[in-house]
Image 1 (cartoon, rainbow, N blue to C red):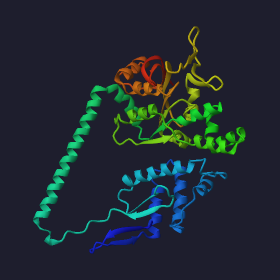
Image 2: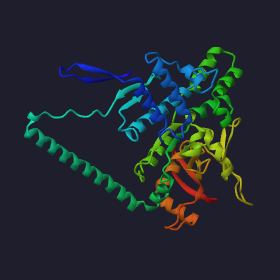
Image 3: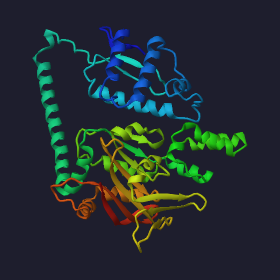
Image 4: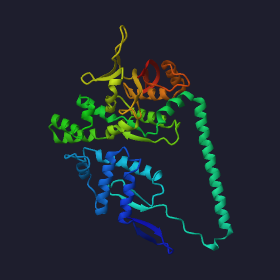
Amino acid sequence: MLFDARQTRSGAPAVREVPLEARREAVSKVLSSAVLEKCSRLRELLSYVAEHSYSQPDVQIPEQQIGIDVFGRKDYDASEDNLVRVQATHLRKKLEQYFSTEGIDDAVAFEIPRGNYALRFRFQNARPCTPVATAGVRRRRYLIASAILAGLALAAAGWFARGLALEAQVTQPTVRKLWTQFFANGRETHMVLADANLTGVQDFLKQSLVLRQYNRASFMRDLVNGRFQDPEFRKLTLRLAGKHWVSFADATAAREIEALGFVPGSRTQYDFARGFSVEDLMEDNAVLLGNKRANPWVELFDPQLRFRYVFDDEKTESRFEDTQAGPGAPRLYPTNWDQNSHCQVAMLPNLRRTGSVLIIAGGDQSAAGAGSEFLTSERWVLELARRLGVSPDQPFPHFEAFLKTETMSNTASSFRLISCRAIK
């Protein structure tokens, strides 16, 4: 859609076309914006759909064609691969962010409607009509009074929000210190939710995937096709493997962290592990929820970690292994389903040391709740600071903590800190 509808005096809509040059200029501004500065794949996607929209605005762009032309996947199959849909969702969020910040005063805005990949342009920020001289003093007084009341309401809301922040600062000063340090580098933070469906698929196939396999769209199809002969069974398995499931524990943990709100204006984006990109781990902050069997991106940080998550496909058993266990100390920490498990919490630099990465990896899904509680509780963050030797005027170092959790009704009912170390 290339038009903007406005009301005429008769009440009928007047349609104004957004000129081609104005559309090109609007797209160019977004491509060169800070919002897409570190998102090369999203810039390529936007450039592609924009060019298509200029020349064929009313023609639907096939998802398969985007997968081939933009992402270089010659065998892209939209029924089995969701890469294009995931990236389009990321781009929609980036466009919303741009036009509410950098581009708030742009004359022309655009969006990608859901279920479509063609750009929809519109005029925005039109100047209000000049009031006629006969409007009268009463209308002006009403407008002035409304403005004053609106200002008072905004001030009250601001003071209320400030009061909540001050309360959090007073009651949780150590938690505030930790998270302000994490968020305050100005980088966008990605909440990367574990692929809960992946664990069930791996259990069914009796094969755990590594990141290299997980990140290749055709791997699951090749694996299923090579293992099963029945075409209907293949189709069903691939359909189940393509579903997006997120555990309640991970969703709750992400929400608890975001709700802290200690750094006003910090940018947080939710990502599903299957649609995440290594580029984001190079430039931005990230919170990786889930062990590497449900969130394979954790694998990239294994070399820096003392405790490594391991899963035995034949026995269907999970455990953590202490790679630095001393004489007489336990080396294996198994998961006893529905009884107890363990949770690893680590704060590390990202791949280019330009931001921070937080890992909350449990031996089972319930352990993620223990990790988020550990990081949002003043009692436990204070204990973390004490064990790391962090004084009130010192920043937190990068660290790794290891918790033992007790499980009741699929929830980590209690936990204790059994190991903690600073990472240099």
